[in-house]
Amino acid sequence: MKKFLLVSIISLLFSCNSSAQKSKAESNTQYPVNKTDTEWKKELSPEQYYVLREAGTERPFSSHLNKNETKGTYHCAACNIALFKSEHKFDSGTGWPSFDRTIAGNVAFGSDNKLGYSRDEEHCANCGGHLGHVFNDGPRKTTGKRHCINGVALKFIPAE
Ligand SMILES: [Zn+2]
Image 1 (cartoon, protein in one colour):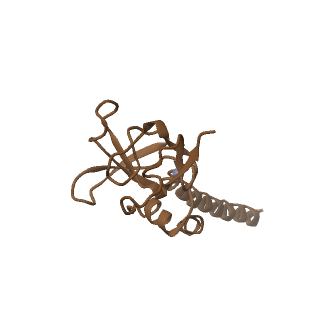
Image 2 (cartoon, helix red, strand yellow):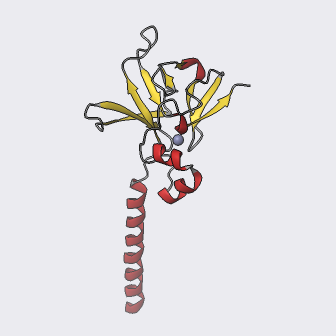
């Protein structure tokens, strides 16, 4: 009987330990879509990985979406959630696809100071993929915001 009790206690200790480790791993999960770097590398092109997972910036005027005026929706290139609508796109002249607003709730914000001044970093709220930055020099007639987005982070779905 004593031996049985001891075994029970030991197995209880082990199960507590493994569940503690599990909850630690789970607390690192910030986004509904959560993949390892290896998984993202497999799924994304090198350019997409650089922008979305390493917060890189594509060369200005390099994206075919920069001048895209077709009606439709811009989705996250990594997880496919809808992020921007064509009706909110405008030509900012900066060389990156620009929007005056996001699809609310699907884009999240954080700050980065890479260029030495404070900017609002923008990323996908569903997978955490970096998209671009938001500035306050957008169209005054609408929101005044310029969401400056890397075209490589977007997937355009034309309206039917
Ligand atoms: Zn995403």
